Length: 139
Image 1: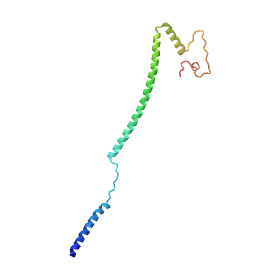
Image 2: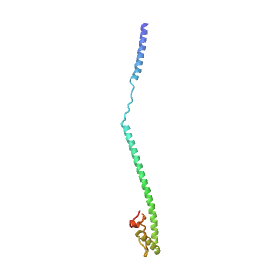
Image 3: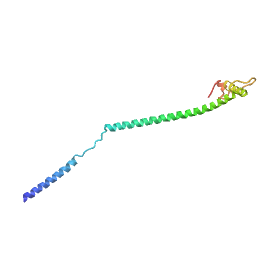
């Protein structure tokens, strides 16, 4: 009987030791996760930077083109006004009196000509006087 009890106790001890060693092994070897940057993550980050750089560059280009469009639209409006003025001048060519007035206006404004017996007074105190700065001076 004693032998049986001893055998049972040994089995229990063996089972307990077995359980203890199994649980102990799990506790002894904790795995540390190492964070490694692998090639796929590196390529993804590089692609992300490339996309961001490209988007920023295209946004800047779009702003530049919008500014140029605004400038061209304003130039078109001013040229349209000039064209309408020139069309009025062309329509005056058929009428001799209107043509004479047109030539007189051009001679006075562009070439600073005067009619006979006409006197011109120049104010030297004015800064914007075209006669002081020279014929053809434009701001």
